[in-house]
Length: 292
Image (cartoon, rainbow, N blue to C red; front, side, top):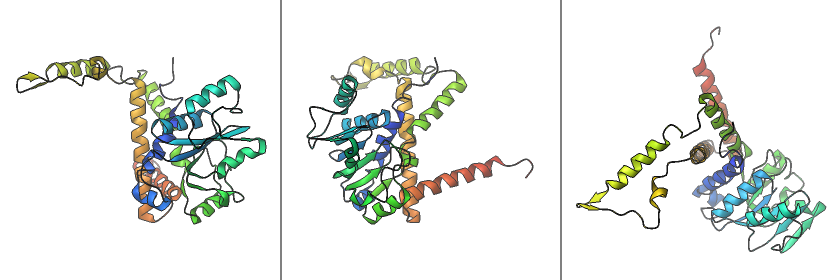
């Protein structure tokens, strides 16, 4: 049937994972004037398509407060926070965020872009390129701008934001979840076997044997009563494996970017570019040339 489990949500999920990783960096958060961690922080999401929705959902599910969301013609704000799943249901029923009952404030038409200027901890542009420009960058009141879209912050705008002390997390890292899982899909297609198929039953049987043999001082140890035995022995699905691989890839990329940024004293975008160039050079050197 083709495809791979987890591809639909991969880009937005990767955005969440990247934001979460960077928000665990104490030095970076101190520079932004924030406490470590995503939970409790306020988020503005520009764009409520596939990427915006899945980023917002995972941020919300892990304790972030989504205070504003926009789509093409409407943006809404609520200081108490918005539930992305409720928003998605409403949009599917009404083809728009317009009139959402939980909104304290609504922006329409040309006013929708004002969502970029709302006060928040983290602004996530997840719509189009060139949304934060030289013209409006000084009015951005977020402490972090995390690029989920491709190129939403122009170079001149980034200079202005940096002078204000705003942390910009580049698209090069943050929205790489989609292509990462597409790479996993390519690996799957090479073997024509879904991830986990060859080992799933063995893993379940080995876990069951382990539970059966758990003893302490000659007495059996009971499993957590809140967990069903089937849940404990369940082996990972393809989706579980894909999510685990994506999380590892995003965590490693974020860690490498932070390391390079500190070492060179650059912003995250330059650090990510330098890492990319180093990897290209390393692969060229190791590949060799037959007629060089």
